[in-house]
Image (spheres, helix red, strand yellow):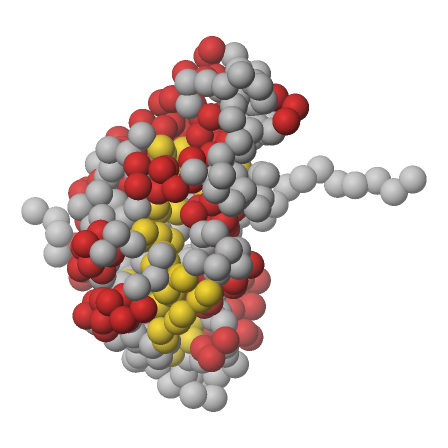
Amino acid sequence: MKKYRDLAPSQRIIMTPGPVEADPRVLRAMATPILGQFDPEFTGLMNETMEMVREVFQTANTQAFPVDGTSRSGIEAVMVSLIAPGEKVLVPIFGRFGHLLVEIAERCGAEVVTLEREWGTVFDPEEVIAAIQRERPDVVAIVHGETSTGRMQPLEEIGKACRELDILFIVDVVATIGGTDVKTDAWRIDAAMGGTQKNISVPSGLAPITFNERAERKINSRKRVERGIRNPDTDVELSGRMIQSNYFDLSQLMDYWGPRRLNHHTEATSMLYALREGLRIVLEEGLAERFARHRLHERALMAGLEAMGLTLFGDPACKLPVVTCVNIPEGIEGESVRQMLLEQFGVEIASSFGPLAGKIWRIGTMGYSCRQTNVLHALGALEAALLRHGAAIDAGKAVQAALDVYMARRP
């Protein structure tokens, strides 16, 4: 019989747009004892987690809880629960994950209308608003922060236009929640879907979401309770089209997370511990302070890359604060550099997708990975790897430029 070694993953400095390094306090929380999912102690932890989700999403919504699964599970749960077959959905696309929203909407049976921008830019809100007024969709679905391009879409004016026309506004905030402002209520977002594996610094496996009463009314109009647990006296089937997924049915998940505690699935106990601790750490630091920290390390990283002689990709006016995209120097094999970074320095950065494959590197400064030692180490390692590959860069300047940014903040 084959024998297997003890699990001992290598230590890495993860500077990708996700996953990132998990906070050690989160890993410690995951090692604590299992509780039953309906144990009053555990349901108390569930309630605390919901409270913290509300704070981080900056919302007063009653519905604020995680969906078990990766961030895509939260996106799919919201979309399959809010989009009925035949409805019109407008999706503005400025990177890979806009295309994902289109695909999920199509699988929901929607009539999908798209707008597209060149990768590396975002939409002028007026362009989206004009399309909303022209198309009068039932739903607008958009990405806030595109990790594929390192860009961030302004949302406030779009949300206002959707609310004035009674259109549901769904936003993917996976890359932004916990790292930069996500003002769910102020921007009139009806449903927002996040993830754990980026700025919250929790392993992938839960997708915190929130949605307001407007969304809740539509979901409840399609509500069904599973036959095996249905109360025939109170659980009446409604006339709306049934939500096509059982697992991602938010009408059932509301009953699971709400006072009724109606059984839906077996909760991922250790992941719930992890999310609770990750959110607690975010709030302990303070949202404003956390966003400022991400901006600081972004500035230091950008200063180092530019001092090295590298150029940054994309429109700087709409840069996503937690992802920096770098043009790969001409004549340099990007994957070979990434391999050397990983093998010789234990540093991981990301390549990209689609039209940007092989053209840019993407460097994340997210959550627990977003700290000075990581930025300095990554810059020094990248400089060394590029020199080994014969790149014409300005040696010795990158780390010093980043240090200038850090030391300028000292009293």
